[in-house]
Length: 386
Image (cartoon, rainbow, N blue to C red; front, side, top):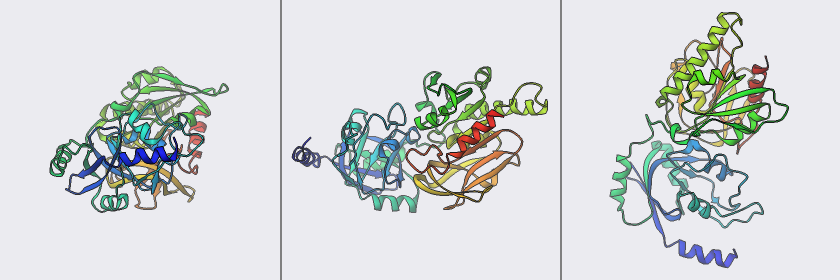
């Protein structure tokens, strides 16, 4: 598309007035783009400077309006290679300036991509003011209005009446429908069963570097997983409230009980199965061990969060996306805290003191983001190889 044609279409686009109404009565105005649908959701902000396509396709954003703090969005378009899941699960996108794509890898514009996937968006929003508001008051339920047929007061009422994400099982909305194998390297001798609570493709790629990976739905019983005789079990990232996934917590507990029985038998009953969790998987492992989780004020979303490894003392710059965290005072004696967030002191990693199980709150597959934490996959590989 020529610059002239783009500018002409965008001039017409600017006539589509829209607004985002928060539950506390605050309203942010902008211009509608993407799909012409209206939705409720929870507003969060992401501080990443790039990678909007990976953010859009992360299932962990299900039920959320994602606000991107970077000034310009859309400049490199969208392509087939950089998606992180089979679709888009977020409720909507909120940005500042929308720009024309100019990239040899681009297949379509961000506007076209959102339209094709049924996701609404608002641009021209003062995202700095919105982010500051969320930092001061916490994440908010909201209603995205694109039609002009709903008044601001009606939109605020819709936001307040929405059920929200607390206590809701959103993993069931984003998980795969049936088990399936993910491509692995031909030399891989290890077999990993990955629970799909909303897994990102780059996690699967990272695991497939050293293992054959079988993805299973979130509700797969532990007995079925154990019957597959895996060398390791992986607990994926995912959306919403971890405490709502009682079935997942119980399945993880059963796998840990199996490992405990192997340890108590001195290995005579078989081999223990290492467990590795990321993000929601970290929270679920902690809950299965007796910890509790709770909400952060405005969550961690971005590619620049500093985390200290308490064993080595090293600081890792990490990619994160979560609204809930393990509560420090609830961590049981069987777990050791291995990583902490240097911004707010929240727990970023744990390991079991007697069983081969560990997890981190952040994303070591980091797509997009830094690669400081890639060693965790090697750690999982080594645990299985033993």
